[in-house]
Length: 131
Image 1 (cartoon, rainbow, N blue to C red):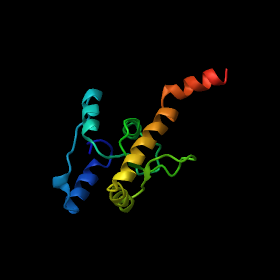
Image 2: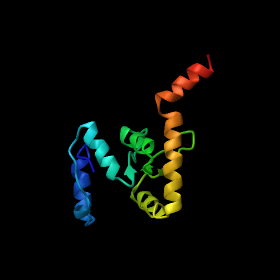
Image 3: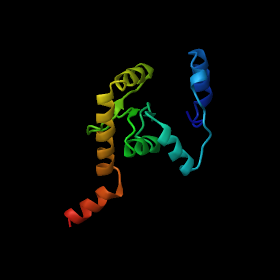
Image 4: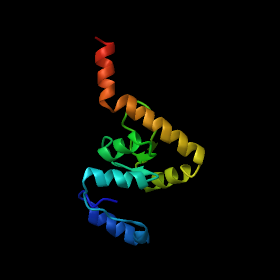
């Protein structure tokens, strides 16, 4: 987890109450090159669970083909991300990702989605095709 945001102290307190604090590594903000090394070690990423848009953590994860658990319910299109808005849905997503076939499918589909929709390539294609 990153020590970022207004709820960090509450999150740390909750981790302690749930008895999972020994399973959590808290990271300070870091340069991009260090962040990408962390992505290389990651099997699953989490992003916004609130009523937010997908953040940079989530976009980078799906661009790299790392399955993502995030709140994507406000999007009008289907995104190959496991939707979660609370801890129970996060837990269900983690259990689902134990299925290796599902894990691989989400990894491939999310990367494809990100490349087609979240990179400058999409704008370039629109300009060239619609020109």
